[in-house]
Amino acid sequence: MENIMYLKSETAKVYTASDGKEVLIELLWGDRVEILDPIPQNGYLRVHSRWAPSGYIDPEHLAGKPLLELYFIDVGQGDGVLIVTPERKHILIDGGYTRKMQPHGRSAADFVDWKFFKDYKQDKIVIDELICSHCDADHYGGLWDLINAEDDHELDCTGVEIKRFYHAGVGWWSKNGERSLGKREDGYIKLLLNDRDSIEKAFAEGEYKPQGDWGDFLKCIKAIQAPSKRLSYNPEKGFDYLPDYEKTDASKLSIKVLGPIETTVDGAPALKDFITPSQNTNGNSVLLRLDYGKSRILLTGDLNQKSQQYIVDSLSGNTQELAADVVKSCHHGSDDCSYNFLQYVQAAATIISSGDDETHAHPRPNIVVASGATGFRKISKDKLLTPMIYSTEISRSIKIGDPYKISYKDYEREGSSFDIELTDESNIEVSYKQTTSGGLNSKDKKAKLSKLRVADKFVYGLVNVRTDGNKILCAVMNEGNGTWEIKTFESRF
Image (cartoon, rainbow, N blue to C red; front, top):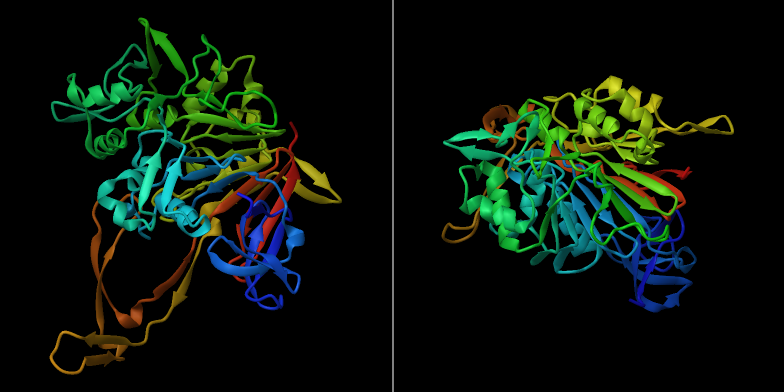
């Protein structure tokens, strides 16, 4: 579109008026900018970008090219990554718990909705690739929110299109009322979901049926009619790529599949059995490497120590495939992690998607240290440029308010409205629901108004990563003044 441009500066201010005095919003390198009026006013163009419907920017900051953008979404406990390619395709990997299982009532679906409705001014969300790294609820829940017709009232956009769905193969099954990961024999998981036809048949045939919320999520996958495929790497067959993201030349984004590791058993695909259910769902996560220009980004799902060691062994002679400039930390900063694996990655920047509740105590201190100790070190002018560690939890905060009055207006009564104002905090009791991340049931709580505080505003810990294939930018929002805290470095590949 001729009226769409991209920011070429690392940051640029958009002003409320063409006098360039009051700052409305600060944009980030690569941000999409819609030109509302091509005729400058006082040297400024009237534009729309991000949430700001109209503002003014110096055109000297424009004429950049589209970048590879990654948004590591703050979903509390869980993962959510939105990828926007230079060709403006959209890839969503995981989404956190569903809204109903979130203390703040939001999942990755809501960020995606904001991106399309507010930023792009579109009524329809179009996801080119929807990827579920594995079958745990803190990963597929937000994807379920996006495609669940029963919850579409939560979205501002009026339509959602999913072009393709990818998954790891391992699923939750029910047989005779018992929940399991299905058929497991001789050290392998043998019951795997594959293409769309496999998902259809899972509900119609066989002794095992998709179980619980995972099964309900798959029913929504069935309903959207998107082609589906299981992702894996079989060392006997060689490396595979996400369809349409094959390696052609460095100017194009390629997405290589490095895991889970697939083995052929009795002529059929099978995945490694890591014994316990959680070790299996996490250990058989989808492992992807994004290559764009000289830049490499590794997305790891919830891989654990056993699976990481298994991947390293399976990549014998090809462990350089794990090396990356940026890595999404495995399993939210859990200490169930292979130090050896981290040494092969040697990331310049590590992004930890960690939860806000302390039930999991993520990220663990030793893994934060290990991520730094194994990271790619670069020093310039007596300053450490890399490695860097980001955490969505550290970047998040809450604006707190002290309530002092409750007002009630009854408009149903006859005549004029009936107003009540209560100001005696010690005698006002408030009943509320308390939800923990992933909690199945909220708890009823009561407290005096004098003991409560109002969560006036959530500042979500979104971590931005952008690259033109050479320079890599990592940024989080400074909650105090609305500016960006930016670090940049050059790719080493």
